[in-house]
Image (tube, rainbow, N blue to C red; front, side, top):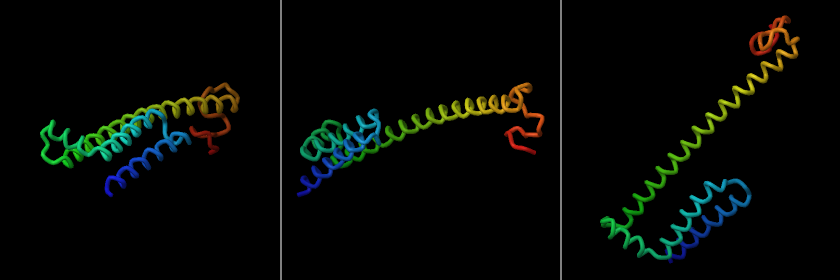
Length: 132
């Protein structure tokens, strides 16, 4: 009975991954990782003796312990990758914000007469372009 529940769960995870991919809520580069995880879960659910054989090869006495170790390693890897993606996105956001600030200053300079460049205008605006 537990095998059927495990297979149903693995198929449900695969279906959710495909649905997220088709509705463009999950990018392809992340979908590949989750598809591999879903397929591995399906294979280990259908053939639990594979985990027992792998634990014998590695030297782990209890197959569940090997599963926990592999899951922990996977979670650490996914977390590290997400942290790297977040750092990259923060750098890109900072660069775009700086470009927007420069363009905004140029626009304000043109609106105020263009003679002063990006500085404050003669009408008494502060550095953010608000009237004093």
